[in-house]
Each structure stands twice: as C-alpha cells, then as structure tokens.
Length: 109
Length: 109
DNA sequence: TAAATTCATTGCAATATTACGATGAATTCT
DNA sequence: AGAATTCATCGTAATATTGCAATGAATTTA
Image (cartoon, rainbow over all chains, first blue to last red; front, side, top):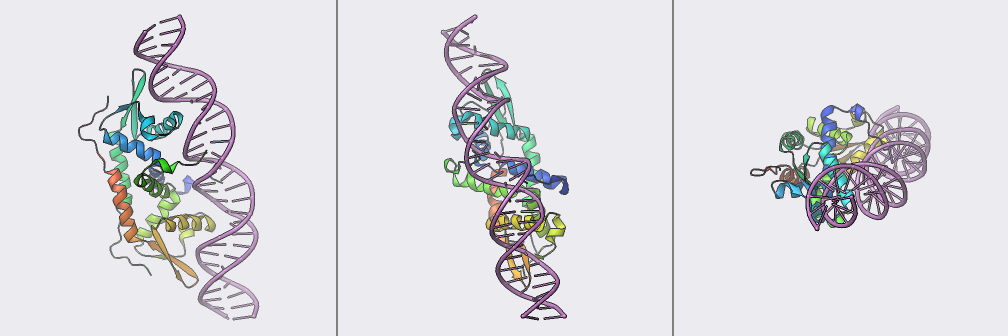
C-alpha cells in the first residue's frame, strides 16, 4: 500500500533508512556535494548549479533541512545554505556503523 | 512527475543515490543487518525475522540482489542469501567517499 | 511607494514504492 | 506420482515521490 511499516523496526533501522532516503536522489547528492565543495554557504545559484526548476530545488533543500543536514540563514533577499557540520557528523557515525559491518569468518553456502 | 531526471547528474551521483535508495527502507536495513549478524547465509526464516509478508520480503531481496549487495544460492527447496562481500566493499568505498567529506576552513554566514 | 529579486508554498500530474493475496515453479518427502 | 515446502511472480490497491507552473511572502532597490 505504499506505506512503510516503520513500527516493526528499531529506531536505528528507521534512522538509517531516513538518512539513506535523503541521499536517495541525485539532486540532493549534488546539492550536498556542492555545499561541501565551496566550503561554506551558498546564497543563490543552486538552481543554475543543479539544473532543476527553482521550486524543485527548494523542495529538496527543505527535505535536507528537515533532517538537519543543512541549515539556512536569511541573508537579505536571498538565503544562505550550508552543511550543518555537527548533525552531519552524527549522521556519519550512524551510517558508518552500518556500512562498516564486515564478515570475517563467514562464508556463503 | 515522479520521474527522477538522472541524465542531468554524474554517474557517481546516480550511483550514490541508487545505493542509498536501497538503504532507504528499514526492512532492507534489517535484512542486511541480519545477514551480517549471522556471518554467513540464511536459508528460510527471514520472513519470521523481519515480520513482513513473504512476497514483500521476496521483493526487497530482489532489489538488494539486483544491486549486487547480496547473492542467493539455491539450496534444495529453499534459497540461501548472503552478503556479496566484494560488492559490499565497493559500495562502501563509494559511500564513504561521499560521507567522509568534511569542512575544515568553512564557516556559515 | 513601485518594481525587482529571491526563495517558499500551493496545486496538480505523472511516476515510483510498498504491501500483500493469489498463484506458479522447483524441489523434497512419502 | 501426489502432497508438502519454499520462494518467485503477478496483479492490484494505497501511499509516496518527483517536478514544475502559478502564486505568495519578504526584502532590496530605484
């Protein structure tokens, strides 16, 4: 029914899924990469940089902001977006714990 | 229109998005965690372990298999699933490159 | 104050995802 | 061979996501 049954999974599993979902669209990946590349904030030109319509970019930014991965400061008539370094770090820890799992002794049948 | 415009992004960005999408559902996270935990393959009981209906689990397994993150071997009347260690490692490298980005000199406005 | 600029929000259409009942295919057991 | 077991596939319903035109809100500029 298109409705994820979150109640049957752990908080951690749901958290990993939520962060992953945020990275599950190339536009959001591109936005984040750009914010890292310029090492600071960006006021404007994200629409030109990414290549999607302005409302679409705005929507992607909103999702990233709701997750806490970026933050936006009003700067005159435009808005400055930047990585929320602290939250990014927390997210990274959670994701690394998940990704860094490894099988040492295991072998498949 | 619900249609991701992959053509306007780099291969890497699309790849990151695809892997992330796979992790974007708690059931798939749970499946992968379980496969790691038992350090080997699992034949059966995934449906009981996760708690969703059998066709639903089967569908999630299919997605993970298509991405190459797990592989399945027929074992009599059941099927053994396990992590594809080599591909998991490749995926991990790509995701770590993305997640490990950091801002050293940057500060927000 | 009026025009311009920048970004958010609304509304809508199209596609994707999630979930599961019913059914099918392959294998094992009796 | 016939029943049982295990998993995949099909079909379908419900919800989610993506994208953009139109519009609105806030600020700056002339």
